[in-house]
Length: 273
Image 1 (cartoon, rainbow, N blue to C red):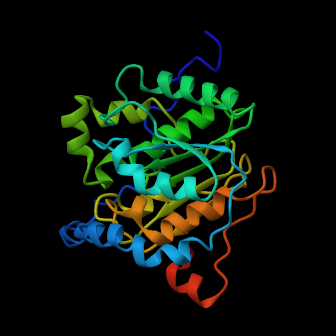
Image 2 (cartoon, one colour; image 1 turned 90 degrees about the vertical axis):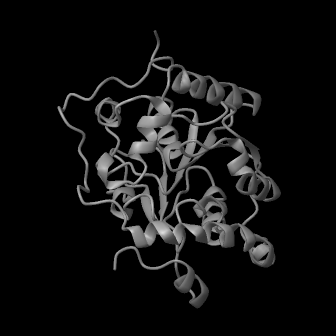
């Protein structure tokens, strides 16, 4: 089995290096998840502003849905990125019921086929919640094929109990989430430019679990805070604009997201505060 066909090997550490061990979001934040309907509806009035995001260079993009969701949930984001001149596809694996057998293998195959079909242009990976875990781990497997990784509300650096979704994960996947996370070094960033978009008002994932720590191995990482729900972050206009802005960077010329200006300062709080 070659490296491109292999799954990540189990971590040599007995426990994952979680950065956040605190409680999951409060019941109040869970109740605020109803904002997702407003976020979806806000796309229409914000559409003129979204059209001011940079136009892309046509490179391929794959979008991975969250837990229990399918490609249908990412239609608004994929449609917008298509409008911004990207060759966008879903993950094409139905509903995301966790890392069942064959999921990462199918993801690896899709990335290789997309890379070749695009004339050997690198592929950008976007993942919403659990989908972001797939995007990050697949980029670790295939850094030579991946241009950038962007995650939306993805809990890669927190303990499983710091989310309100771990019981749903166990119910839908039939797997022990602690055993699953021990297989990977989830907090370690892929060796490609990596952006984590998160919200401090996320009602499902504790926001601290979505913070990427910069390392010497990969200084091209960043955290972008938006004001969004977990269930609506993939349809939130400010998150969508940030995704388009990150994808539009020239390959090999990555720069951190800029928050200058009154509007950006209001839409994108300072994550270092």
